[in-house]
Length: 366
Image 1 (cartoon, rainbow, N blue to C red):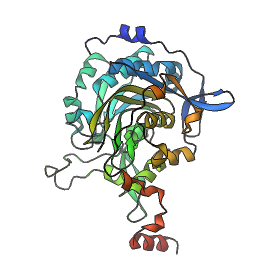
Image 2 (cartoon, rainbow, N blue to C red; image 1 turned 30 degrees about the horizontal axis):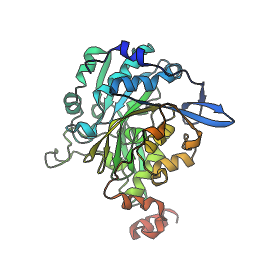
Image 3 (tube, one colour; image 1 turned 90 degrees about the vertical axis):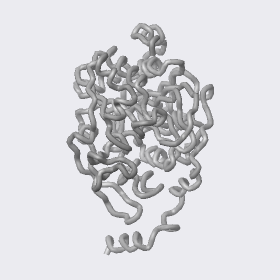
Image 4 (cartoon, helix red, strand yellow; image 1 turned 60 degrees about the vertical axis):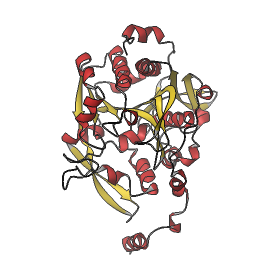
């Protein structure tokens, strides 16, 4: 990033303005009417500098983002799946590009980078991935969500068809937070692909101090992230959809500079892609991400559910892509080895529902 300066950002910013924001029941996202069709807008940039790409992807939405933030706290939510594997986690350069953009629109008064890392202490990830350099350069605070207040929400579990209590970060749920999902473009072993929504929904549940994956975990320590997964392919797809009303980004940024294919989100292999996607309609942004990865959108359950419910725009024909062309940058990512098993969400639940779940269902209606 030695060549990165704010002047470089401003010199390479070539995309024009966009239409006014339309308020939706869930939130606000950039939209307009083009040729009589309702259209969401998503920016697609490419290049050789992560920070610059993120900055340019956000610039078309400057006015709308500034208005949406207002006086709210800006929460940058990275995706640190593994505190030791950079390919599985948000790169510091992407965060720097976003912070530089926030600086350019004069919204630096209250900005935090907040995460609950999946596999261990969050600050281990902050240290290993160089996040502390951001606190030296920008007016930003690093927050471990596991050490912050939480609220209780209830999620679905496909093993027993009952609600289960989950501790979820109050900071992420707080209406005074403007949530920016800073995701990485990756395939996934349960939902085909993990993009901006999953980063928020599964990142918001917290874990106990001392919890890690493996034998080194403190006895009795647990992570509520597993509850959000719903005990199966159906459960996680449904929970991602059901929670999207409470837990979703107000601004989505997906870094595909180096994507992950294969057995993501931890054990995949790199894809040299050099793309960045951003938008105020998180569903439209994730839809473009899926397209760039060469994944059949109909196979991604939770995004289809959200589209059917009208939470955002999932129709590719009604999304205006600003900047680069999808067709020029589409790559076919190798899917997880178990991708056929993931398709079970398409089948009627009666085909393989457990007898215990059937019993619980009958009891709840008698």
